[in-house]
Image 1 (cartoon, one colour):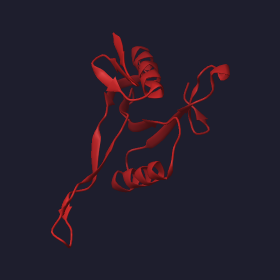
Image 2 (cartoon, helix red, strand yellow):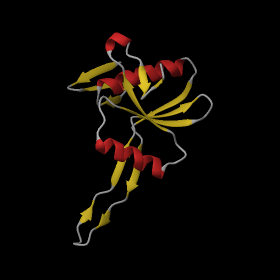
Image 3 (cartoon, rainbow, N blue to C red):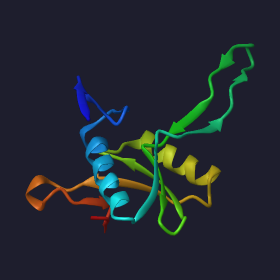
Length: 129
C-alpha cells in the first residue's frame, strides 16, 4: 500500500523522501521476493560525532548520518545504500565519514539512469539491475 504526501511517499508504513528512494525500495522488495536479499532496513542512523560543549560553553549537536537502506544479502553480507538524484560536497563528506567510522561495511551510492534506458539502477558505473 502506498500513499503520496507532497514529495514524500509512504509504502509499508515507511516514509521515503524522494522518488528514487521509493523506486529503489520497490526494486529491493522484488529482489527480496526472489531470494537475493534476506533483509531490508530503511533509515538506520549512525553517529559520526557525539554532542559536545564548545569553548564558549554552548552545546553542539551531534553529527549523524541516516542511510536510505541497510541490506542483508542472501549470503549474510551487509551493505549500506544511499540513493542519489544528485550528489554534492556534503554527500562526499558524509560518505567519507561513514567509511572511516565503519570500514567493514560497504557503502554504495545508487543512481538511476534516464527513462529511455529503462530506469536501471547503477552504483556509479556498476549496474545493479
